[in-house]
Structure formats: C-alpha cells, structure tokens
Image (cartoon, rainbow, N blue to C red):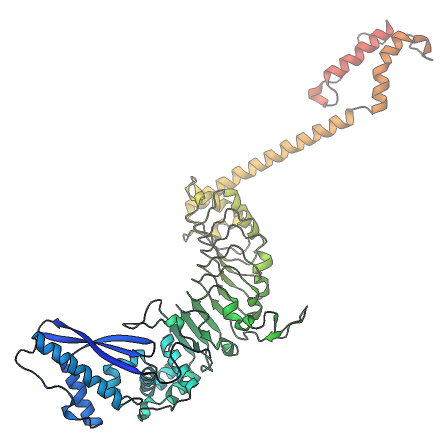
Length: 542
C-alpha cells in the first residue's frame, strides 16, 4: 500500500488547552490535540476531567492528587480559569507521557482518539464488532464504514503492530478481520471537507479493500479512485458495484492495472497485438452504477464486465457512446443527463435492451433508435425534440410500452398526445405516454387522425400514379430523333426540291380530315405540334 498521511512510527502526541468559554453557568475548556500531521479540537468542562480521573484512578492507579481540586467560590473568575487552564493542560500532558502507546480507553475517548487517531479508531471498531458483528452478518445488513476507518485498519496491518495494544481482548484487531472476511454488503461514504473538528482530509487517505473476501455488493461515494486500492481482489465475488462522485474514468476503477500495464487484454481473449498483461474479468458483476461522476467516455474497460445487465452512467459528461457492443447481456441502460446530441445506429451498441433512459440530454433526432426492437421503456424527457416527425423513428418498435417525452419543445404542439400516439398505429392503446395511460377519447381521436392520414396517403399515391402515367405517355408519344428531323424537313423539301422527291403525293389530303386527338383525352400529342404538321402538309399540296 502507498504511504499514507500518517507516519509509520507512532508520532509524538501533543495536547494543549488553548482557551476557555463560559457556557451558561459553567466554564468549558478548549483542548487541542496534535498527532503527527493531524490535529483536532474538543471541549470539556471540569466535571468531565473529574469523571475521567475517577476512572483512571480506579483502573490504572493514577495518582489521585494529579488533578487540580474543585473550587466552589469564584469558580468562574478570570484568574481562577486561567490558572486552572494551565493545570489541566499539565494534567493531560502527564497522562500522555505515562501512557505513550497503550492509551487507556477512558483517556482515548476523552481526547477523541476513537474518532481521529489510528489506534483509537481500530480499537473502537473492533469493540463494536465484538459486540454486534455476528448479529450484523446473520441479518445480512449493509455495513457502513468511513475511509478514515478503512485507512486506519490498513495502516495497522501494514505496520505489523500488536493486534491489541491496550490489552483489552474486546479491542483486538482480529475481530475486524474476521468480520471483513465474511461481510457481504459494504457501504463506504467519504467526505469532501475536513473530518469533524480535525484537519484530516479523507480523500487523501488510501485504503485497501483486499481484506474483504466475500463481498457481493459495494457502494462507494465521495472518495477518489486513486485512494481505493484492492478493487481487483473483488472480481471473483462482486455482483453489484456502485460508485458515485469518485472518478473521472471507468478505466481507473475497472482496470486499475492499466496504469502499470497500458497494453492489457481481458483474460481468455485472443490478443491481436502484443500485450503486457492479461487481466481477469469481473466474473459475477451484473450491476454497475457509476452515476454522478465526471466520466467523459465509455472506454475499453467495459471488456472486463461482459455479464453486466444493468448499467447506469447517468449524470456524467458523455458526448458519445462507444464500446457498449462488448456488453452482450445488457438489459437496462441509463444514459440520462449527459451531453448526448444524437445516438446513431444504437442497436449496434445497445443490442437487445429493454429499458433505455436518455432524459436530460440534447437530442434533436431519434433516427438512431429505429431498430431497438426489444425496447419496452424509453425515457426521452428533457431533450430538444421539436418535430413530431421524429416519432416515426420509434413508432414501429413492436415492444415499446412506456414512452416519456415530457419537457421537450414538441409538447407545446396542439393535440400533442394524440398526434404522437397516432404514430404508433394499431398499437396506440398499448403505449403509455408521459406516465399516463391512453384514454378512450384519445383513442377515438387517434382513429380519426389515422383515417385522415390514410386518405391523404391514398390521394398522394393516386396523384403520383397519374403523374407517372402522364410522364410515360409523353415519352412514348415523342418521335425518334431521326424521324423527327425528317418530318420537320418534309414541308421545306416540298417547297424547294419537289423534283427530288421520288414519289410526290398526287393529291393533297382532304381538308375535312379529323383533327389530331385531344390532349385531355389521350395525353399523346399536344395541340400545337398537331396543327404544325397539318399546316405543313397543306402547304405541300399547294
């Protein structure tokens, strides 16, 4: 384990009484404790000192005259308070010198060692588990620990100090190790500021999770991925991993080895290029919740979680979705409140998912969702969808039952609900829109809209058919290019070189011949070309 903020050797401890305060009718003394690089404060009145002294004299045979005596008259006078402050400071310093390592439990609690000092923290935790550990394990409850507690346990193990400094069997470190070996459900909650009245920053304290041998579920929040050590040891057992406000990348959590071996591949895969490490997969991990982080990309680390069914990456900084094709078992995906503008060919990445949340993004089109044929629940609320035509991309999804489009620009369109439901055709009654079931009145309106749409489609098809017939008729009526050239030159040849015609007509065509066909009846010829041809022939006969 990396070297932590606490030194390996037992640091010099210092205690001072730095001031006093008058609270109601009594005086409290402000005590400052320094332990290596860390310091914290607490407040005690004289009666607390007296109670401590009684316990110590009974247990450790401390000199009874070491504590300054009580004062009845003038106990809150300035001179008495200042003199007593110095005497109480000397009293505490004498006690620490008398017990440099194995601090008596009453003194440790008086100076808040159980909250801020390594030995005191582990002793308090060991005693708690001595009394309640077995009961907690049998109940299968989630057990909560702070990074400072885990750090203290890790440091105790690394320093190889006696497991029971105080001599009290209830505070033996073995109670903690037995409990962590069998614990199944763990929650680790950090903090972003100083711990209590101390200057200790928990995010700077590394801790090791390898002492947990049977974990099925772990939730970590408000930590730093750099301080979390031993995660790979959980790959053989962990089924659920929740991590919030703790990382900027999936890689640092799922493949911490990547920092040492950049060219890694999952164990069992056939590497396409030379690799420096084969990394075991998370064999039983089916739920991964990494919401509320600062993740900017779905990286290659997902190759190590092929059995994940529930994936929550909401409230991150994703602008695209990659690599999810490696997750063959995905059923539920939450990508809400990211920075997505589109999701092209989603079926190639998301496979046969049933639930998809894309709420709170910047989507303007749904073109990439048209082939998610297994989708049952789809949340598209709080996006930038403005055109009802976009619903056609999801209107043919055969399994879709719940659709949320609330808080999109299209919601202000008149009759928005019925127009959206109409896009689902005969399945409109099966779709719940915006968390509301479809009403009979809406279904009636949908039927009317469907009838209007069908009529429009029939009209459009007829119009298109008529247009096609007209175009085909025009094309067939037009003479070939050579014939057209000959016909157009026929009248002029009759006027200028009649003798060259080998077989000129003997008589002109009859003047009462039928006119060319009407364009409105046959669409074969236009009136103007027909009149031109007739006039040309009459000129020839003249």
